[in-house]
Image (cartoon, rainbow, N blue to C red; front, side, top):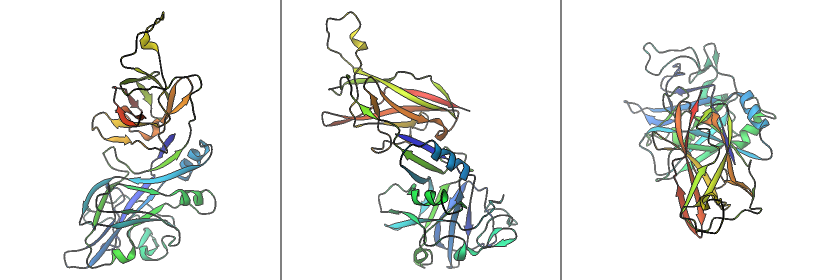
Length: 341
């Protein structure tokens, strides 16, 4: 399975309380429905745009069907209700990111704001700035992880057929935005973050097959899994097809001329790969039963990693999750690599 990430070319937050203020280079994107110090309802929404040429180029790599997810990573949250929904709509007009910050004094007015898509063009965020009838959304309940992972396949398909790509608007529903009982603040990392969590469009599709051929399936959970062709260092623009060598940790002795430790076996089809940042120990690509399944060519298990989705100058650990004899195990055998520019 393949996961390919496209990063934004621009993003910004806009604020009803400061209708002319530009915050295009802030490290944070905000989606708020709260009150100011005098009790007035104020709203913050966010805009984000991905290059259409990057999107078209990515789709050209794909054979068959695919899904696309908009991913934003939570930096801070306050006063969240037990249930809420974040909506995204395609933007209907071109806009300029600008070079302002929320904290600038005097405020920067060049670039997108609540009332303008550029210094000279008015658009009104509550009016015709986005397509109300085209939307994708994600709903949350109390104990959910609050990172955004909104399926936007329908919108991306429209961008490649009938709708100009002017980006996405992220918001709460109007009924929640202007409810005087709400004081919701959601902050996500923007494209200008200095962390490893910039927003992205994540394309996911099936690029593997699975056959056992003449291979032998592993039958116990006490195993060793190694990256057979790990070059240790990869350019950020590269694609690596990792091959796995799997064997019993304590193989049964047999009469043979070669070492029993060279007897490779196959992981079952219910096996998945994931990537963890070696420094922070956080999952960068989590196990996914639909999109990180490990393939087999009958001799080796394998999976593909598109390095463009990983931050450069960092190390990543490869983790394997598999189900053997009804038991789920996660294998961490110190398989890691570095991505460079």
